[in-house]
Image 1 (tube, helix red, strand yellow):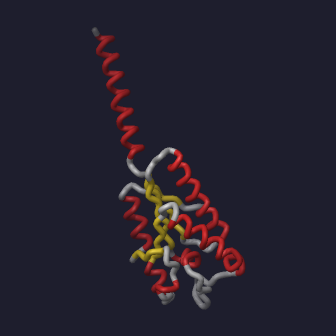
Image 2 (cartoon, one colour; image 1 turned 45 degrees about the vertical axis):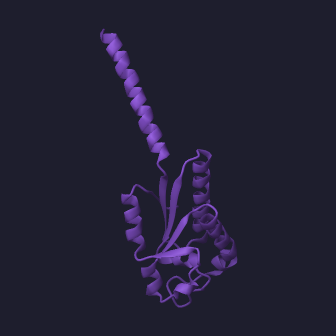
Length: 161
């Protein structure tokens, strides 16, 4: 009698475990990437990481919500303005790769569904006209608050080092 109850409980636990695993995988994967640095190679690696994580989710037929939040020095990557006279002024490395990086960001946003947001406090700090921000990038009142909110909603926080 005891062994049949034990077997029943084991099967029941396995079934419940499988249901919870399936439910977890059926929920969209949520990820927020934080870009607040000025290194072009690091930003390129961030874009590559985003493409890779999306490819992995797509291979699993899993829905995803990927958000890319630009704060501080990250503003350099969402405008063609050279930001002269600001702490975020561009350099030769960025100028050389700007078209490539812009194209990769645009593909992630328009084709892969990534949401790109720029901290409006950063933009306002240097008085960059909104029209100079790439059209595929939205504005959020506070980038760090947005990151915190997304984390509270279950998003994993990623920042490429």
